[in-house]
Image 1 (cartoon, one colour):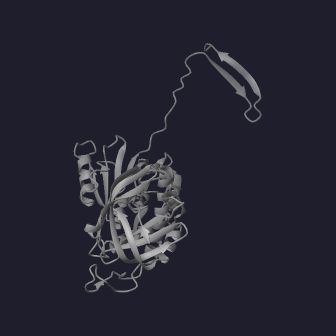
Image 2 (cartoon, rainbow, N blue to C red):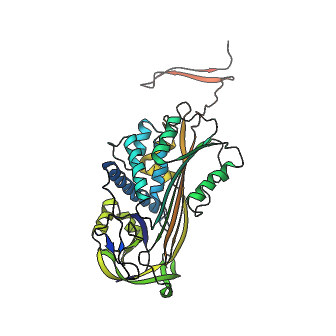
Image 3 (cartoon, rainbow, N blue to C red):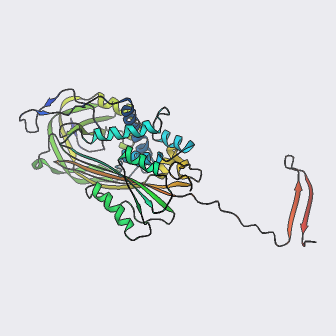
Length: 412
């Protein structure tokens, strides 16, 4: 069956392969397929489940509010950055962030942090033929009294680089952006445009992925072909390949899975059938639904046509996260007292930028997410100075009965 257009591509962690050998891309000697070197711990399995649930919740929210636009998000990157911030939260703020990130209420702060630490080490070392990098950093205003214990925990659990900066210096923004550019192999050159006067901390995650297809597309077969959008047809460079791939279909979709390298990582392409849309497909997806699609895949002979793609995307995720229940973290009621015990702070912004390129060789993708922490605004007092004639009313509050009313024109 021909898949003529790319409707939705998401790179997610694939399950362990059932065999340990496979056919090499050109039909040569079998090459080793990656298997999990050990079983996931209960905490790691819970973290994967939570991260995947958050992936679909956040992406549905993004697509719902921008239905006609391209969207290429990394909720996992947002999870890392917000996880570092959540480690500084207490009380209802911590509970709201944990629930919005889809972690179970039974997982406490330490269990979440430790599972992130060991899972990250596992993911970045699974397949030496695929370049997967996870980097975290914390940048804070010099002399601001952040808790050293909070910073030390984020360094231990998230491997975060942590550094105080002179936020008023001309070098502060280039320093932060330089770190992001390096961590994303130059694909996300900037994440911070300027530093607001009330900003006291940036918590930043960077993800980088580069994988070569296990079975590459033949460049000589790439042709110009139409790609139908909501506003009409475009001419795109369409790649073609025929062969055995993992395939599944339902009443409203077709799906193929394309592995990278030693098959620890893959791209799943979901194509809505005629009569439905990519937006409707996204709306129907959650972690169990996606797992069911993956579980239904079987090897089939497929003639695949897939467009080459290069996309840059950015979004302020604060409104999306608020819609998912994290609003308290962005409000004056935020409790980040584990992060800043003596000065109240809150999150003002969660900004994400992404990059993806899909071609005959494989895929390169990157994401950076920045959580900006600012001073909680002081209460805004309304100035009332009774220094001129005024009216006063004395009343009973519950029934509303007025006992006295007066106009005071002078003070005897």
